Image (tube, rainbow, N blue to C red; front, top):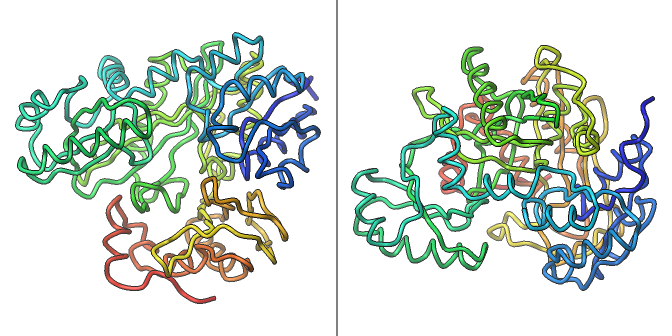
Length: 457
């Protein structure tokens, strides 16, 4: 067994991803440190870690979103590295810089790379230069008068998108020119509130596109591989709901082209670590760069299932300066995996988040079933953070077996004390289009408009 990549890693996150990073640290012989807010003092991830340090009050800006508190926590813990997970500070170039200025390794790419790919306009410019196709649109931030002129060239329908955006924030669909001024104003306001940056650009709106992303790993020794793709088209309010790997109904040629484009995108910015290159596929099979997420993804587990590669362990080893140790020819797809995100939300009440205490937690078990969660019986689900409480991952020899295992696992998954989205997922897996793998990014919301979207156990 090789030497541990670090002595002690601070996990600058919470919930299921904190538990996941802690598990990878344990597998590698690395001591883990949980940084926890006042609301998470008794959380599962705190008890799973080897050590724990407080990082501030319950509101995220006073704890998990505070660079100063996280760097101070890492120093107090004597950590030689920080793993940011996803969300919170994971895509903050300034946080990456602050860690490195403090002599602490940031498990991820450099601050410059994070900023370059986090600015969607700069990312588009970079991809065009690298020969990676992008959605037709503008390549500069626009003031309102320039946006009006550019919109006529891009054509309607189009999308106004925040330059610093993500997760659907600062995004507005514009059907015709009359709607553009209001869309610009609302997109700027939301972008300013979410990112402190009201820059926007325009993209042509593709009709019925699929959202397919490619996982990449790159080291500091010019090694870069893709780990194939994930289908992420089942979305509600621009948020992923269910993901699967590999994507259904892709030709071998398209799969190869997507992987090569993702590697080209990573190489274009000198990427190091685990990253995800996201694409939109139109109905004619053409694909376009959407954005690059410079962190571990929520849905990384399905790629682990079909490739057998521990992505979090790979992140840690790459951050320690180790080479990948394998090439593209060594990566293959084995079977099919699907992930369902389970939230503390009430699907019968417009998916209203419902914090509270879990009185009973009985996750499913069995061959090909994995549950990544940050809760257990007695866990409190705080009101301050994202309401996702678990990810249900199933793996089968093919997509049919994976779907069967997903249905069985959802039926046996029992949570009491709070409402969850389990009833919604039980409804979803019965929809014929989903079963056939014939979906697009607008499919779910159109289907939800037809009637009730939940089913009793």
